[in-house]
Picture 1: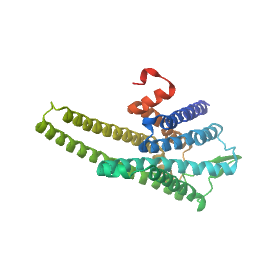
Picture 2: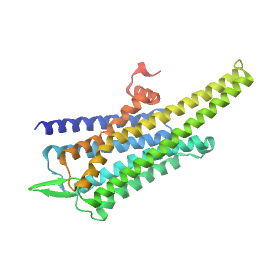
Picture 3: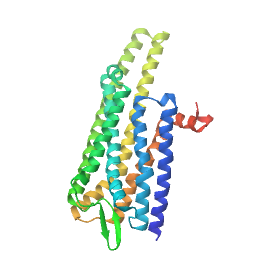
Picture 4: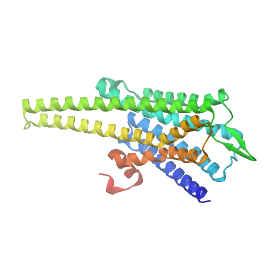
Length: 310
């Protein structure tokens, strides 16, 4: 069928793009000194999460959707279903933590930046994984229906969206995390605007008091302007990443809510929305390339493209 062929090709391409793109992100952060920052540790960890989606979740989803049967056994089915919830949770929590980190950096300035260390960053990353793994195994602990069900003589391994408890659990996790993420980013944008307005006021006062002919004053003003510009760019990139997550995962949330209301699982809309949600894992490296000059430079140097080095 044309549907199966299209689904198979899309899944294969998505998996390859996801793996290659996120490996490049991880290698760029590790090998390029100017990208080896505490902020980018969260980006590298998010890329590792997306890499696992491309290596494990997307291929299994593609195979099951193509042959309409689960052929990998019950144990791998439980691991697969748990991985979907866990990796989705890790991605969401990373975006929330990144937004919180940026907000605290803008609110407390140098005091917060000096208190931020590699150990604390790794603890934050570890905490996101612990919380997400816990959320992923809760359905198994409470035995909310089996992830593995039969359809005639075929075996399936799908998250049971038609089951009320599971669906309510997944929908509430997604909705709550998305709302929390948007609240943090809204506060972040509001705070950034206030900081920019205050800085512009200070710069205007400095110019009126000391004039623009003094080199020291001009250098200070340029540094402050560059810093503000960088803060704006970083916030913009992170905001775009969060919006990309919402766009990719919102259809899955809608299908889940419809299944909760109607009491049945629409197979094709479920598979399409699920694959669209997984496509977010392949989207982030493109967003870094398009909207982040630092990552563009890092990718270029990693791939040996001299025309982009400068």
